[in-house]
Image (cartoon, rainbow, N blue to C red):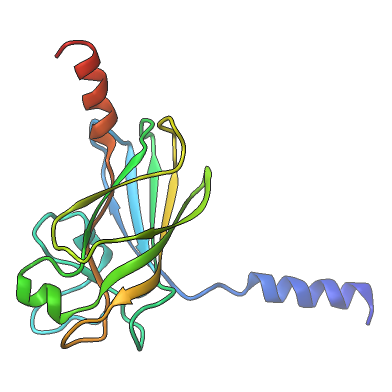
Length: 186
């Protein structure tokens, strides 16, 4: 093959977009200039409920539920932050936290791969509980992570549905501020 043809073929392969993500943007707060959360798939709306990425921040117990056939192994949530202070913790509510019935009817994440733009991937086993949990990112100090990626590796199967859900996925930007205030005697 001629070098130009090979380069053209390689360019075409790498220019092909990966599967489309669905994203939700959030405006500035006192702790971050901009947040965006993207998911690799979304369960279509059902019975008046929607399952998009915005549900990961709304605090109502609504959930993001993946929308691929099967249990969602390999599906991802990606959180991008601009202008955020250094942090070291994530807040996660596993499953569909709207009610105990919804929680157990749907799949929950058992094992996740979490990576950031500053750290190698780590495997984290999540407890099978509706209670919010805190995950500490690798490293001894807070860091200015800008991208956090959460990939489903294994699940607790749902009793009724095969989809897997999360109700909260967020950087705990307040934790470091609270520690600083406490160290200053507030």
